[in-house]
Image (cartoon, rainbow, N blue to C red; front, top):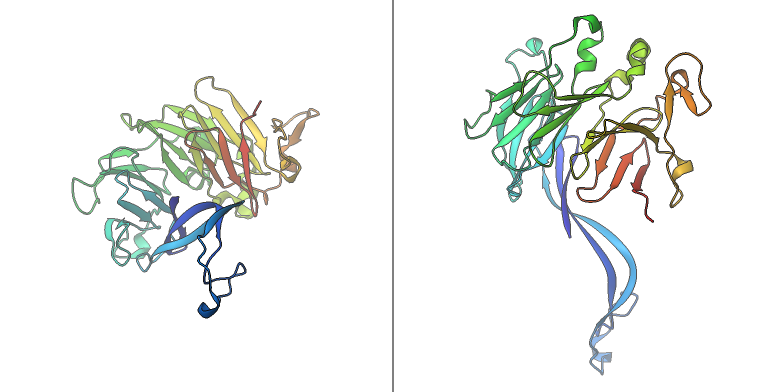
Amino acid sequence: MTKVNTTSYKTIKLWKISERDKRPEGYNLKEEDGRYRDPTTVTTLRVPVFRPMDLMVEASPRRIFANAHTYHINSISINSDYETYLSADDLRINLWHLEITDRSFNIVDIKPANMEELTEVITAAEFHPNSCNTFVYSSSKGTIRLCDMRASALCDRHSKLFEEPEDPSNRSFFSEIISSISDVKFSHSGRYMMTRDYLSVKIWDLNMENRPVETYQVHEYLRSKLCSLYENDCIFDKFECCWNGSDSVVMTGSYNNFFRMFDRNTKRDITLEASRENNKPRTVLKPRKVCASGKRKKDEISVDSLDFNKKILHTAWHPKENIIAVATTNNLYIFQDKVN
């Protein structure tokens, strides 16, 4: 049995997910089709038994947490104490207890008295995997703030601020938009955190605030296309990122149903595609390459041929096994490492 939290706009639900591969048979007061029997017709006593059945996965809502957010929720994160969790929208972060559905505590509030003075919004938030009093939240200005709930009830002052100085040579009209952080994830070890902006994935050491220790370009070839991406609103897409179980590989999505993996040890990267042609069991995914300019090779795809309506915004990696899940517009793909 597993319990998960999900969010839809402004409401949070706690679900119970269970698997069932047996069904009871041989009731005394009920027929096999579910109809109840007349008790006066029961002349013998039967002992119900369990019979094997096809595996069934059931999801049922257990609790609903509502009426605490004015704006759409962008993040929920379970605390390492497994008793509390946080939820974040554009301007506030709330702390909840899993057993209390009608009350939460506001721990971050960046809403100005005059909304015309608003300069940034909260884009993502997550609890530290080991330290139950520590959490981070990212902003549309490209900054990440680490907060300690032991310092005060309202964490309006951060403990650490992570921000990379902007390269003046790359300054453009789109700089602030593409520097907005769409996702932040702690490593399983708790030593590092990963952030995703529009063009790159960055790895930060919690002990070093002034710059990331690693930077991976996800689709740098789109830098020359920012004007058209702005016109079709794709530049505002929010891509997620995730770690593998050992924190040695990171993964994130891109356009054309591509998703990218970066090996932190070997510094190798690979681009794979989630498509209907690859949905047959045991189909091996072939690496894909994008040609940014010049003569295109046989197996490459031109950057001008990318379909920006096909995008992978959501990605997840199994915490212990090499199993990944990527979500396209209306499909969920699950891939497993090659099995001998």
